[in-house]
Image 1: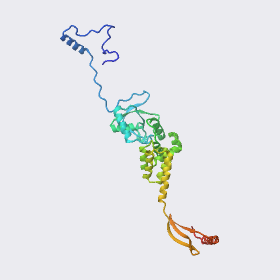
Image 2 (image 1 turned 30 degrees about the horizontal axis):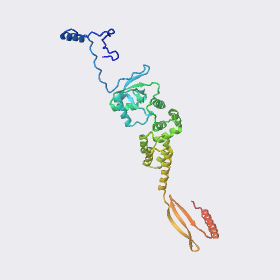
Image 3 (image 1 turned 180 degrees about the vertical axis):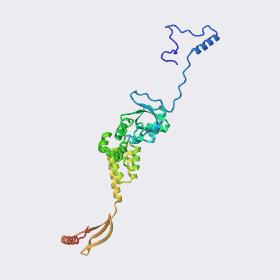
Image 4 (image 1 turned 120 degrees about the vertical axis):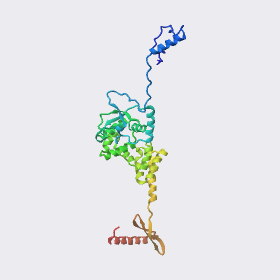
Length: 346
């Protein structure tokens, strides 16, 4: 193989300065030259065999000798429910599979040895998306580094380690909400989660609210996690509690389509809730109307109305004479007192 730096073949030696190398065959017959070339070829070492074509699984990356590494079969790998990244789209997996098929595995995944029901398996701490991509490609193994410092029995330690190792993209509010919700159900407090996740308790609570949305709203959050952030959780929760799931999802989509700021979205939700309240407020039905005449002229009416399962009485009366108004007030006070003394409940 030629070396571009010297311009010489591997078995050549440089000629003295200013002296041309002797050319073979000068002054000899053609047959002699051919024989010399055959003899020279017979003296050369055999050419190395061509390298085998690359397989679908790349060669392992060489790491420091102090780290425990291995090629691990995919059927010995298990995903953990405590991985910090809870959401992986199919498109992301397919994109990564395409990159792996072209460039190979550049970095090892990180695993720990399983215990209990996972004994004999390796639990993925970092590289779960690469694992799904490798499954999609049909690879038999992945190159992995085995971390022996993480307690396989400690969900919070696994969560924290996976968050540290997963550096390709920041965790979304939905990622944190889903995992926080699951860990709370396991008995961990929001204070414990706040310490591990590096967020305050209020933020953790709002992330959990996002993860608890109806499915139609969650679909919008999954599609646009960079737009529908934790800052919208309070109003989204109000919308989900007061409106239908479809109406709340439509409002969530408007965050994206209209690039809404938080305060604009808050006002939009309030308007929608008030409109709904007006639309569904039951109208009072009139049970009876008694006209009231003073001096032969209609001066008002007494109405009995039914609304919300209750009966209401309304008296509308206009007086043109002050003395008559005072007399009516006195008689009404007497009537009310008698009604109360009769022991009637409201």
